[in-house]
Amino acid sequence: MSIEVDRLSDVDGWEACERLGLELLGRRPSPSLCGVQILRAIHDSGGLVLGAWDTSGVERVLVGALADLAGTFRGFPSFFSLFAAVLPRRRNAGIGLALRSIERAEALAVGVEVIRGWVDPLRSDESHVSLNRLGAVGVGYARNVFGELNDRPNVGLATDRVAIEWWIQSPRTEAALDRGRLMPHARLGLHQMAVITKTSPGPAGERTLVEVLGSVTGSLLLVEVPEHLDLLREAAPDEARRWRVATREAFERLFAEGYLLVGLVHEAGRSFQLFERADAGTVLGRREADAPRDGAGSAKEGT
Image 1 (cartoon, one colour):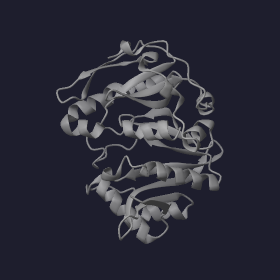
Image 2 (cartoon, helix red, strand yellow):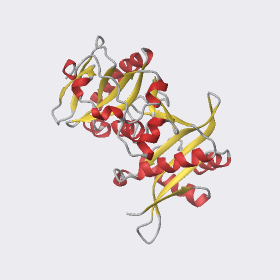
Image 3 (cartoon, rainbow, N blue to C red):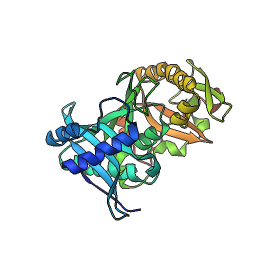
Image 4 (cartoon, helix red, strand yellow):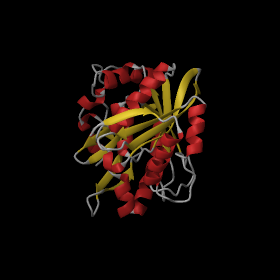
């Protein structure tokens, strides 16, 4: 497969993006972030619209896209990520990372230093890309950011999100993208972190949330999340809603207590959001040689 990433800067490209959005979100009656009018406005106002094209066949096919709004943040030129998506059948092939790499290059070319956005904390794949592959950090939590959405990825769940900051020239990002290094926490084992959730195996192999612990402390804390949220929503929608409601207070508490979301840990078919009690300057300035300190607890505190 051959992939080319370029700017979508005309009606043909925007219409291709709109069709991709409809395929991803379903044809439910809701406003589309991928509509031609919105994409045109983003392009004309100095934002960024990128498309990833599969050029292997006779015709180029759009298989992924992203759009960023232009703005400022704390006095710095910034982009805000409106959406980024790859067709499900083309995922895990490096397309999303290719889009993000070009996004970073385009942002640097116009003086942008930070790209912000939202990720769903129950979607382990989103966190893996943002935190582990790009070097972004999660800095806060908000409930039901977009209200009730009836598109395919969101129907039935409150749209709680974690606020993400991606400082694209930070040592953390340079280590991940420019030198291909793993995040420092990759060298730590689960036994060096404290788990604040208790789960048990469900009837179909999925994890069922039993309890969120309020008394666990440590410099590195783990919150378990579903390995595959969409599969859980289809098989057990009530359980998916329980995960949302039960974990939101834990996420809010950790951010309020000075933790940052720094990584996604995947172990033995289970996914955990990793929080570290540290300031942003320490985390963003950390290179691959600088591992975080071990947590005070251990993985056995939550099962």
